[in-house]
Structures are given as C-alpha cells and as structure tokens.
Amino acid sequence: MRRATLDDLEAIVDIYNASIPGRLATADTLPVTFEQRLTWFEHHDDRRPLFVHEIEKSIAGWVSLEPFYGRPAYHATAEVSIYVSPDFQGKGIGSLMLKECLAQCPALGIRNVVGYVFSHNQPSLTLLQRHGFKHWGELPEIAEMDGNLYSLSILGKCLDDTP
Image 1 (cartoon, rainbow, N blue to C red):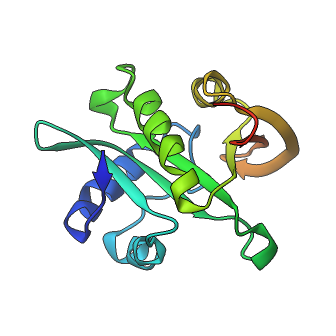
Image 2 (cartoon, rainbow, N blue to C red):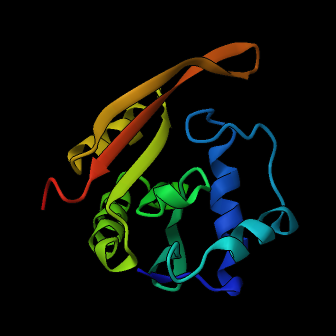
C-alpha cells in the first residue's frame, strides 16, 4: 500500500464506479468522472491521506481517510472508506488495506475512525467488525435508490481501546 498520486485517480474512479450498480457501497447512483473526483482527491493531505494497494502494477483497491464533520473539535476522528476492484474482491485485499491504514492512524493524529456502511452491505459490515469496529448507530431508511429505502449503519473504533 502506498499514497495515491494523481496518476492513480483514473483507476480510483474506475473502482468507485464499478461499485455503483450493486447499490451496496455508495449512495451515488450514476458514474462519476475524473474531473468530479479531482477536488475530492486534492483534499487528501498528509493528515488525511488516500492510499492505493497495487498488485503487479494494477490498482487492486484504495482506502481514504477524510476529516469527520469538518469541525476543529473532531480533529482526532477520521472517516474511512475502502473500495476494492471487482477483479480483486474476495482475496483479503480490503482487510489488508484496512489493517495497514489503521496502523498508520496514530502517527496521523487519529484516535477514532468511523465508517458509514449501508446496513444491507454485510461484507463491509463484517470487514469492519473483524477489525474491532463497533456499531455506534444507524440512520434508518435515509437513502433512496431505485425506489427502495436503505438504512446507513455507523461503525466506529477508538484506537486507544484496542491494539
């Protein structure tokens, strides 16, 4: 795993867009473009990085740390997002990326990590729970896609609590 560069953004967008039709991983309902994700990419910095996992010169997945809620008092909390290319799903890449990301959090000044996951996305819920995330809340039927309502689970981990 390494820090993402602008040269990786096309692959990052492709992986993200591949997740949209499944209605499991994102509330976006239409593909996004490189240009639409450029500002998001540029907001990542040394304190809230974007990482990619590369296998044989292919981007297998990415993990993002972003500021939580945008207020100064939450400076030690970050939101984590993980996306794995369909070609590499089911091979433990997500778990590996999350483990490596969490290991870097203390050096980034991050004490708490939160993840927002659709409540019907069992693979992502299981991934976070395997890494010590706990259920911190739920927003019932907050998303509407294709005429269906979906709930959003909030999972969190305090890095001071567990190794």
